[in-house]
Image (cartoon, rainbow, N blue to C red; front, side, top):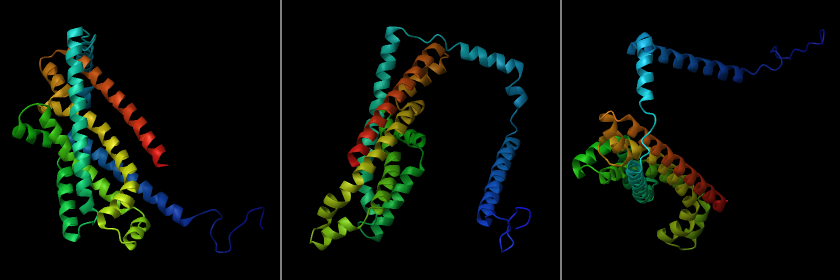
Length: 278
């Protein structure tokens, strides 16, 4: 005791954790590297900040934005936007459903339920499918199947199969082994073991992943229209290319309304699935 101050017997100041200090220093170092990379990126790209925020640029941007208002709310155009929104919804829904079915089939060998060769082949295929972005798949499918929503559906299905197949496979790998082991020891076959032990445990998480990807595919389905895959995206591209900003604003509002509705519906369904699983 010396003036109310205590010193630990090993000579370290009380309350100083060397491990926490190392973690803090490592975090600061990583933050410094990220900031340096951001600054270097702006320098490399040579962004003209003066031209971007200059008086003339701001005036032109304000003029361009003002041209979007008021949106075209005529009944005839609203009917066109509604039809395109339903097309976008159908593309995302069917693409996600096809991907969930194909991903479930590929998840079994990817999780090692078919031997090491099947596991390696399934994982390679899933990596290939998800490594190609949806827009690239859409461009390829437009060439293969022609313009329209069918190409967008195939593009979403191919990419999402890679994503969901990987997530489904990891879910199977992380299941508790006791239920399946008990059925195998009781003499059940591989199909019965999976149907009565593995699938009931994995299904709630599979449904949650599928609904989450459906939300994402709604947004992507709207974007795929820019490469001719139909729906709201193709409608938006058409009107923007003709400088019809009022009609473009209506399409943007339809996109927003569709995304909000699907997000709300998907969140409600995920909550129901979680409550049922609990």
